[in-house]
Length: 122
Image (cartoon, rainbow, N blue to C red; front, side, top):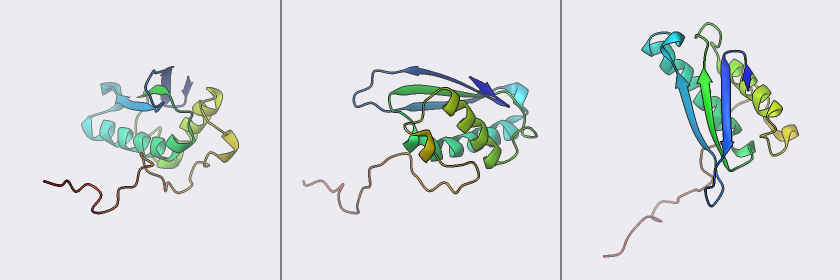
């Protein structure tokens, strides 16, 4: 699926427990290394906000095909991803997905490790 400067390819995976895996790809047509890395950072941050709202059990590849001028802000990356994920029916509940431009307050993992939990006895 494609929208604006982004293309998303996805397929089911067989991980147990079900979880999503992501990759972000920006080719040389997107610009020099600085521009490609900026695009990838924007897309990763947009993915981080949508991660808890996506149906688990998919491998998702996001391909940047535009330049920094076509997607200069996080809001535009969020809008493109929300459109793609809605059309692909990857949201658990599309009504609860955050709107583009809203603050990203989630983390990649739901696990919270308290200080001292990782201590090992010898």
